[in-house]
Length: 159
Image (tube, rainbow, N blue to C red; front, side, top):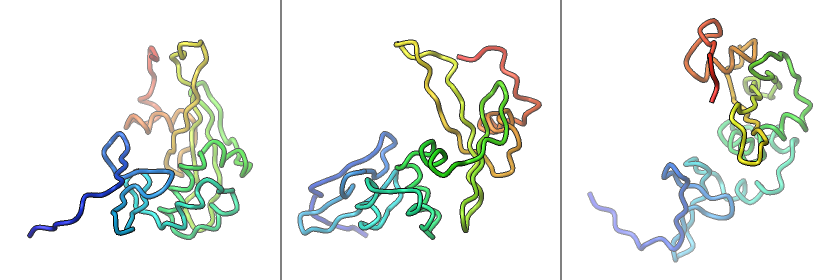
Protein backbone atom coordinates (compact mmCIF):
# COMPACT_ATOMS: atom_id res chain seq x y z
CA UNK A 1 0.00 0.00 0.00
CA UNK A 2 1.21 3.48 -0.76
CA UNK A 3 -0.32 6.74 0.34
CA UNK A 4 0.50 9.81 -1.70
CA UNK A 5 -0.15 13.30 -0.42
CA UNK A 6 1.03 16.79 -1.08
CA UNK A 7 3.92 17.95 1.01
CA UNK A 8 2.79 19.66 4.19
CA UNK A 9 3.23 23.42 4.37
CA UNK A 10 3.85 23.18 8.10
CA UNK A 11 5.47 20.41 10.12
CA UNK A 12 6.55 20.97 13.71
CA UNK A 13 8.07 18.34 16.00
CA UNK A 14 9.54 18.25 19.47
CA UNK A 15 13.07 17.09 20.28
CA UNK A 16 11.88 13.46 20.27
CA UNK A 17 10.42 13.73 16.76
CA UNK A 18 6.77 13.74 17.88
CA UNK A 19 4.27 16.11 16.30
CA UNK A 20 4.17 19.14 18.57
CA UNK A 21 3.30 22.81 18.31
CA UNK A 22 1.84 25.15 20.90
CA UNK A 23 0.83 27.86 18.45
CA UNK A 24 -1.26 26.42 15.61
CA UNK A 25 -1.31 23.07 13.85
CA UNK A 26 1.74 20.83 14.12
CA UNK A 27 0.96 19.50 10.64
CA UNK A 28 -0.79 21.53 7.92
CA UNK A 29 -1.47 20.99 4.22
CA UNK A 30 -2.12 23.50 1.42
CA UNK A 31 -5.82 22.51 1.24
CA UNK A 32 -6.33 23.73 4.83
CA UNK A 33 -6.28 20.36 6.60
CA UNK A 34 -4.27 20.52 9.78
CA UNK A 35 -3.57 18.47 12.85
CA UNK A 36 -2.91 20.00 16.26
CA UNK A 37 -0.68 17.99 18.58
CA UNK A 38 1.06 18.39 21.93
CA UNK A 39 4.10 16.14 22.42
CA UNK A 40 2.70 13.60 19.99
CA UNK A 41 -0.85 13.69 21.38
CA UNK A 42 -3.42 14.85 18.80
CA UNK A 43 -5.73 17.44 20.32
CA UNK A 44 -8.87 19.12 18.98
CA UNK A 45 -8.29 22.51 17.33
CA UNK A 46 -10.61 24.23 19.82
CA UNK A 47 -8.57 22.88 22.74
CA UNK A 48 -5.33 24.00 21.06
CA UNK A 49 -6.81 27.49 20.61
CA UNK A 50 -7.63 27.82 24.30
CA UNK A 51 -4.26 26.64 25.66
CA UNK A 52 -2.88 30.20 26.03
CA UNK A 53 -5.98 31.23 28.02
CA UNK A 54 -6.35 28.25 30.34
CA UNK A 55 -7.30 28.62 33.96
CA UNK A 56 -7.74 26.16 36.81
CA UNK A 57 -11.52 25.99 36.36
CA UNK A 58 -11.25 25.03 32.68
CA UNK A 59 -8.65 22.36 33.37
CA UNK A 60 -10.81 20.85 36.14
CA UNK A 61 -13.84 20.83 33.84
CA UNK A 62 -12.07 18.79 31.12
CA UNK A 63 -13.52 15.27 31.12
CA UNK A 64 -10.93 13.64 28.85
CA UNK A 65 -7.94 12.64 31.02
CA UNK A 66 -5.42 12.80 28.13
CA UNK A 67 -6.58 16.26 27.06
CA UNK A 68 -6.46 17.35 30.73
CA UNK A 69 -2.86 16.10 30.89
CA UNK A 70 -1.99 18.23 27.85
CA UNK A 71 -3.66 21.21 29.51
CA UNK A 72 -1.72 20.62 32.74
CA UNK A 73 1.60 20.38 30.90
CA UNK A 74 0.91 23.58 28.99
CA UNK A 75 -0.38 25.46 32.05
CA UNK A 76 2.48 24.18 34.20
CA UNK A 77 2.14 21.71 37.05
CA UNK A 78 3.73 24.12 39.52
CA UNK A 79 1.32 26.90 38.60
CA UNK A 80 -1.67 24.53 38.68
CA UNK A 81 -0.73 23.21 42.11
CA UNK A 82 -0.20 26.74 43.42
CA UNK A 83 -3.43 28.17 41.99
CA UNK A 84 -5.43 25.10 43.05
CA UNK A 85 -4.10 25.37 46.60
CA UNK A 86 -2.65 21.88 46.60
CA UNK A 87 -1.57 20.44 49.93
CA UNK A 88 2.05 19.83 50.84
CA UNK A 89 1.69 16.44 52.53
CA UNK A 90 5.34 15.66 53.27
CA UNK A 91 8.76 17.35 53.34
CA UNK A 92 12.17 15.81 53.72
CA UNK A 93 15.72 16.30 52.48
CA UNK A 94 14.66 14.97 49.06
CA UNK A 95 11.87 17.47 48.35
CA UNK A 96 8.25 18.34 48.99
CA UNK A 97 5.38 15.96 48.20
CA UNK A 98 2.24 17.72 46.94
CA UNK A 99 -1.22 16.19 46.55
CA UNK A 100 -4.32 17.51 44.81
CA UNK A 101 -7.64 15.77 44.21
CA UNK A 102 -8.73 15.86 40.55
CA UNK A 103 -12.40 15.30 39.80
CA UNK A 104 -13.05 12.12 37.82
CA UNK A 105 -9.36 11.18 37.87
CA UNK A 106 -6.67 9.90 40.20
CA UNK A 107 -5.10 12.48 42.52
CA UNK A 108 -2.30 14.63 41.14
CA UNK A 109 0.74 13.81 43.28
CA UNK A 110 4.06 15.48 42.57
CA UNK A 111 7.43 15.88 44.21
CA UNK A 112 9.02 19.31 44.07
CA UNK A 113 12.79 18.90 43.94
CA UNK A 114 15.64 21.36 43.68
CA UNK A 115 18.50 20.48 41.35
CA UNK A 116 21.71 19.73 43.28
CA UNK A 117 23.80 21.25 40.49
CA UNK A 118 23.69 25.05 40.29
CA UNK A 119 23.02 26.87 37.04
CA UNK A 120 25.85 29.05 35.61
CA UNK A 121 24.41 32.06 37.45
CA UNK A 122 24.47 30.18 40.79
CA UNK A 123 20.70 29.61 41.06
CA UNK A 124 19.20 26.15 41.39
CA UNK A 125 16.33 24.97 39.18
CA UNK A 126 13.18 23.52 40.66
CA UNK A 127 11.66 20.45 39.00
CA UNK A 128 8.26 18.82 39.44
CA UNK A 129 8.10 15.02 39.20
CA UNK A 130 4.71 13.37 38.83
CA UNK A 131 4.59 10.23 40.95
CA UNK A 132 2.00 7.50 41.64
CA UNK A 133 -1.01 8.61 43.69
CA UNK A 134 -0.18 6.25 46.57
CA UNK A 135 3.26 7.83 47.16
CA UNK A 136 3.62 8.74 50.83
CA UNK A 137 6.93 10.62 51.10
CA UNK A 138 9.06 12.87 48.95
CA UNK A 139 11.92 10.36 49.21
CA UNK A 140 9.65 7.55 48.01
CA UNK A 141 8.56 9.72 45.07
CA UNK A 142 12.11 10.54 44.00
CA UNK A 143 13.14 6.90 44.47
CA UNK A 144 10.23 5.79 42.27
CA UNK A 145 11.55 7.95 39.40
CA UNK A 146 14.73 5.82 39.51
CA UNK A 147 12.85 2.52 39.74
CA UNK A 148 13.75 2.08 43.41
CA UNK A 149 11.83 1.95 46.65
CA UNK A 150 12.47 4.50 49.40
CA UNK A 151 14.73 2.18 51.42
CA UNK A 152 16.99 1.55 48.42
CA UNK A 153 17.30 5.22 47.49
CA UNK A 154 20.22 6.81 49.35
CA UNK A 155 22.53 8.66 46.96
CA UNK A 156 26.01 9.36 48.33
CA UNK A 157 26.56 12.29 45.95
CA UNK A 158 24.12 14.25 43.82
CA UNK A 159 25.28 15.86 40.58
